[in-house]
Length: 260
Image (cartoon, rainbow, N blue to C red; front, side):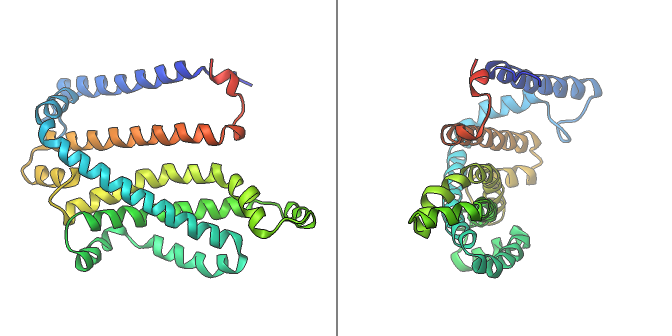
C-alpha cells in the first residue's frame, strides 16, 4: 500500500496545481488572442478585483452573511428531519418520497414564489440557500442512523438503555461522518441558492453585481465575482474540513503519518 503523502506536501502540490492552472490560462489566452469579452486573463481579473474591491466588499459580505444564515437554518432543519425519519421506519417510508419530490423541483422555480411571499431582498436569498441545503443533510443523517446494527440496539435495550439513550450515545455519533459529508455538499449548494436568488430578487450581493456586469458586457467583473465566490467556497469548505477532522478523527486511518 502506498504511504500517504505528508499534509504539507499535499498542500504544496495543490497550490502548485492551482498556480499552474492560472498560468496556463494566461498564456493560452494571450497566445490565441482571446478577447476579454469571451475569456479575460487572470491578471486582468486580479486587476479588477484590486481596483473594485471597495465596491465589491459590501456585496461580498452580503452574500456571505446570507449564505451562512441559510446554510445553518438548512442544517438545523435537515438534522431534525433526518433524526426523525432515520429513527422511525414508518416516518422514513412516509416522508422520504416527499423529500425526494421536493428536492427534484428546480430551485430557480421557487425563487419567484419566495418573492411573492416575502418581497425582494435578503429573505428570498436566505430561504433559497436554506431549502437547497436541507435535502443532503436529511439523506445523510437518516442513512447514518440506519447503519446502526439492530443487534447492537437489542443488546443495549437488554442492558437497560432507552431508545433516546441509544440515539444520543450511539446513533448520533455514528452519523457524524455522514453529517460532515453532507455539510460540504450543503455549503457549496447554499452559495448556488444565494447567488441564484440575488440575480433574480435582490439589489445587493455578488449575484446582483454579476447580473449587472453581464448586462453591461463587463466580462472581467463577472469573472471577478466568480473568483470571489470560489474563494468564499474554498475558505468555508476548509473550515468545514478542519472541524470534521476534530470530530471524526476516529474514523480515519493513518493520522500519525499524515501529520508528518
